[in-house]
Image (tube, rainbow, N blue to C red; front, side):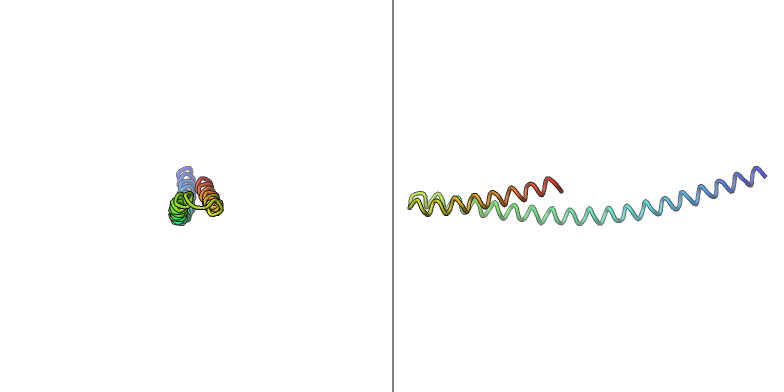
Length: 98
């Protein structure tokens, strides 16, 4: 009888291990999908940051050219630059948090 009890306990442990392995595989699949989604979002955000940096560079170049012109135009460009910097800062903060 002792041998049968041992076999029954072993069989139970094997079933439990198999069920646990199934749950772990499902969790792994979900985590892999989430990882893929987050990587895609990160790539999209990096693209947005790159675009904003390009806009900032262009705006700064225009501002430098206009600096030689009137002061009113310079104020407009300064506001555009500040707005671009704020957008870049928001993207960077998002990237740090995700």
